[in-house]
Length: 530
Ligand code: NAD
Image (tube, rainbow, N blue to C red; front, side, top):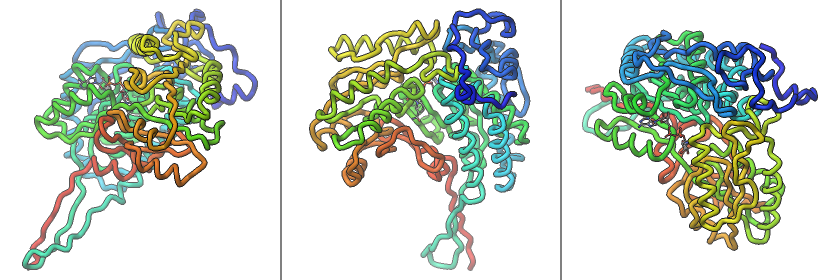
């Protein structure tokens, strides 16, 4: 594969036009495949990999699904077929769980921690070597800009595997000063939970899979990973690297399929010890209800309606950039999107005008084109959902400042223009998670008022604060009910920094040492020395 990235080409002054999405391919792409595959920015290997119907990865082997069904994968930039993969059904899930159990009780479960570390590190190296290929594949499948997958999704996934590789040899128990009459050695061990069922969404398919795989494997668990039916590609490609790295068969199994039946079969399977889920609150609630039956362990990373607060003493240029990044990064399909922008009344008009102007200038097009700044939404259904919220905003009296419609010029796919409303707290667009490029800007007058309004939501995933007064920022950060608070920044993530929600944004934490607590059981061992 050429080492020249899209970004290099832009810098070399060769961006090429954003391809007309309807432009017919001149051979190469398979029959009926999306024209995006003909872009000169898609490497031949990626195009070729997408030609073959991809199989399930179960017990270290590539298997056709017993379901007998094929899952079509759509290119969000055109609405046409991008690839096909076998679709896991309940029987396939069962086979994957059995393979994971065998590996957990066999070679993976018995492997020394340092050996597990080497394999995780090897996986990170292999992923890094193929970073460009993964960046393209993720961009093609999700529609997001390749300039983002190349600097965020892929390198952050690599770092995640490296970070947790380090923990395998450092996650210890304690010796306990017990007072029970007699003489004892009492200590704790951290043991793997067992077989982990990991269910991930479509907005960061590779990265969120790595948030689950890396800590689960570091702690000695085995995993059955079910990617979203919309975005199974990078997970399947990652499984090839798992195989190449030499993980024992069954340690990682990848079974793409729909929520029903595949996701449900995984959640209900008696051979699964823990479910780790990222997705919508509605599905999270269903999963929690189901696992309550047999008390499976569970981690839930759900939705958000995060406040981003701009105080009057903020550096306005930085706050504008932060507000844009907060809502338009990844087309707004971000759980922590700063979708409620609270701006002090003294800065309100200027800030709204600047954001609207910059939003209208964002270049939309297929994600793999390096000039694209915002891609299409993931699916037609999701686009319609987002447009429905925009209509609701209008109907409830919000002032539309920019956007508010599909962008047909960007292509036949699922493009929605970056949209900015001025609204009020009670409007639907200011209360419900839209999961798209729709910002509601809300004026405020004083600090206590904005803290109260920012917290007035069932969610509590993240929040942003913009001010030059650091003492004020820290006091506000402590009062906000959110799992992560960013001061003079937004969307900052790192493997060391725990991630998860207060309130209805979830249960448990990913990343950092906190994640390992959720992938291990604590065992007390007593030895009578008498
Ligand atoms: P979704 O809940 O529709 O789907 C998520 C996953 O669950 C998919 O793999 C899907 O196939 C599966 N699923 C669906 N029904 C199921 C069922 N009955 N049983 C088991 N599995 C089932 O969510 P989505 O639309 O893919 O993702 C968007 C949502 O994810 C948003 O609400 C967003 O906020 C949330 N999200 C949260 C985080 C976080 O870290 N908190 C990160 C990304 C996305």
